[in-house]
Every structure is written in C-alpha cells, then in structure tokens.
Length: 313
Image (cartoon, rainbow, N blue to C red; front, side, top):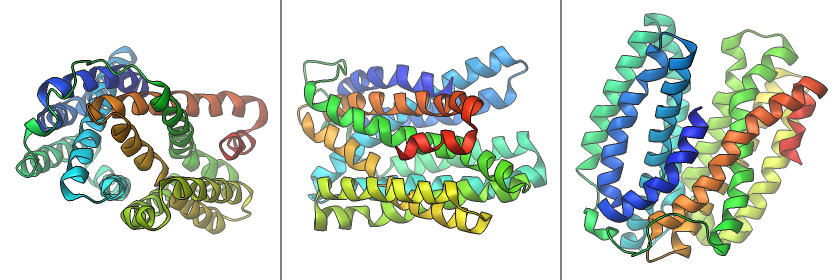
C-alpha cells in the first residue's frame, strides 16, 4: 500500500512542482509526511492500516519527487554534482532510524516512539526550509505539466526500476533471511539492514566526487557489478558476520545508482526537471512496489535465499 501510494502520487507531484515550485512542494509534502506517518501506527483495523499506508506512501512519493527536483535546482546554482550527497543524507537518516528507532521502541513503546519521531522531523523540516532556494527557480518552467514518460526517461526509468527493486527487496527481506538462515534473534537479524544502509550512506556521501572522476555511465556500471557481487556473497555466506559484511558491499554498490538516474531524469528535461524526475521515479518506485512481493512469491516455491538471487540476476 505504501509503494502503491507513492507510485500513484509521483506523476501528480510533477504537475504541482511546475505550478508551485519544488521548494514550496517540499515544505508542504514534508509536513504532511510527518502527519501521515502516524496513520498506520494509530490504525484500529487492518483496512484503516492499509488506507493509512497508502496515504503515507502518497506523501513519501510526492516528497521524494519534490526534494529531488529541488536538488537539481541546487546543482544548477552550485555548478557541481550534489545529488549523491543529498541521497547520502537519506541513508544516514535511515541508518539513524534503524538504530535510534529500535532503542526508542524498546524503551518507550510504539506510540511514544512514533510521536517523538514525527515531532522531531517536523521541527527539522521547518528549520531546513529557511535555506531552500526561492520557488521561482523551477516554477512554471513548462507549459506541459503531466509527467508522461518520454523515450529518454523510459530508459533511465527501467534502470531505476531494477535499482529500487533490489533496494526494496533487500530492505524488506534481509532481516528475515538472516533470522531464518542463522537462527538469530530479531535485533541481531536487523544488523543486515542496518549495515546495508551503512554501505549506501558511505557510497552516496562520496558519490559526487566519484561521478566527477569517472563519469555517470562508468559509475553506474561499476556500481551494478559491485551490487551483484555483494548480494551474491551475502546469500552464500556461511556465517552472520560474513553475511553482514557482504551486505555492506552490496549497499556500497547500489547506493549511487538511483541518485544518478534521478539526476539524469531532471537533466533530460531542463525545461521541467520536476516532470523528468517524476517520470523516472514513477517507473523506479514501481520496482519498490513489485520487487518485494515478487521475492515473496518466489520464496514460497524455492525458499527465500534462492528467491533473492533474482536480484543478483
């Protein structure tokens, strides 16, 4: 439901960015994200849980497109690559959420954890908004609004589909794989996801420098090979320590693929970067939507370890 909400909202976000500007859209969708984050947690039934997840997904998708569009505007102003560093901030946040969130959950319970996280994120959002570029930098750049994919953005979108399918599959299934394969408790199993995010954060924080040295095409090609090799090693590892180490290398590989593709989508449509990013991210997040359930269905027939080799392929 979360992924479906994101995919449905992303093309609409491209329209609204063209009308309002990416800065204003980032502020609006960021605030709504902090509110809808509470929806699934407070839901009294499965149906309301799914509805709350869909609403949360819509805000995640809209915020994602808005932030990336504003990142493209910042790159233009600075005249240097910065997109990987911004995505590195995302990975650092995911890493902090995995460890700090787990500690808050154990100490205070789910409701107190959720309310405190939402409040902190809302406060940070309004502090950050003071430093946004003006909305005029990318408002009303194109007379064509809706984010229909073009021939150029379809190619990047399909690559993004694969990258985010792999990210989503490892994020959703790594801890379950570790727990089933090595018979360890949940907190130890979560280290697979946590260290995967460590690798992603490290690669993204250095990704802009690497992209300037190697170029985007070489960087994506090398990242894809490292992703496949790291994931394969994690799946055949005979011990939890080796599996966690391999997940770090898989994260190092996959971390920079999506940011480069997002930025490429924005540059393919310089008259409306928000629309170009929306087209690429909509296809990309379809991988988030399809990947984990596909792995789950395959796991029913072959086992989870074998099913995750689909991401290597």
